[in-house]
Amino acid sequence: MRKIISIIIALSMVFALLTGCATSAETAEPKATETVNGAAKNSESNEKIKIGIIQPVEHPSLNQIREYIIKGLEEQGLKDKVEITYKDAQGDPSNINTIVSQFVGDKMDVIVPIGTGAAQSAAAATKDIPVIFAAASYPVEAGLVKDLNKPEANVTGVSDAIDIKQIFDLAFELTPDIKTFGFIYNTGEVNSAAAIEKAKEYLDEKKIEYVEATITNSGELLQAAQSLVGKADAIFTPTDNTVASAMPVLSAEAANAGIPVYTGADSLVADGGFATVGVDYTVLGRQVAEMVKRVIDGEAITDIPVETLKEYEKIINTTTAKQIGVEISEEALKEFQVIE
Image (cartoon, rainbow, N blue to C red; front, side, top):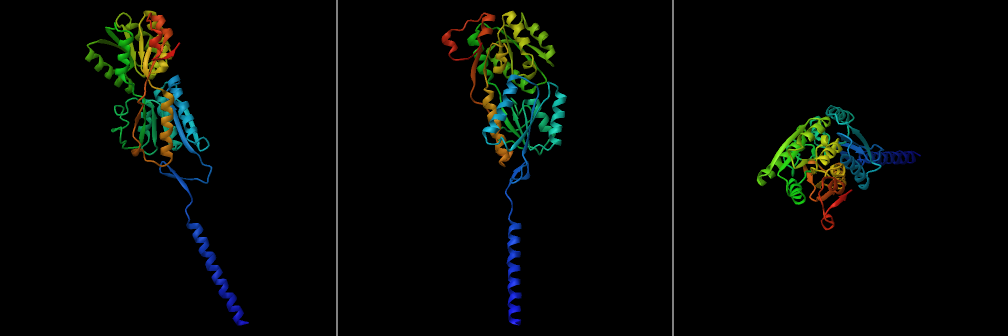
């Protein structure tokens, strides 16, 4: 009997030991995680990755970028894995800072600012949350990065820098009698100021004169346009958000005076500008989405260079061409994306 009891006790001790080992192994096994912004998120939970998108103002170009960022994220298979919060600053710079502060306070996993001003605000507000900008034309000049190929902090993105030379080459092809160019832009927008400097360099080389009409808000655009009538044979405005928000005002005034307006974006041509060599913002939006996916997958910002679109398209508004008396042959129009 004693032998039987001893055997039972021994077997019980062995069973307990084996059970304890099994429990320890199960506890020690790490659960699958995904890291976003340095914070591990349990892949077995329903917690979504929070993405904050901020836009400075409602405008067709900016809207298109936002729409295709979201579409691109869906195409990357993230539709059910992300929670997107979109906010519009309604053209007020102070609102941009407020929105960015909210995003930081809400602990967004990724912030996606559209435009240079929003990108600068986001970069200043956080050094921890990844900032993937869209359409910051000149990120070095804007202080977002020091090296396009090797971002050193938490900021990268896709630039929509326009090829100034191509736009002016197009201008002299379509309207070769230009003697003086007029510039309209907001001096407070870094992207615009940088584009105008490049325009000046180009025209200086060509020995073409230019005059400026600068603005600080869209309400000043009409007066600025009127000030160039009689002084300029053509007008150039870059990818300027302030001008874009009231582009029909500039277009109407220029058309009445028979002056072509060359722009930095296709949407400004759609709003009555004459022509541009512009960026396809649907492509840009998708590129931004791809960058966001790379960050979500754990890739470091410093390994993601700033990207710039290499493909541009000639765009012309034929209705505006008729209004200002510029004739374009059917053969020549084959080279353009035509807006009527």
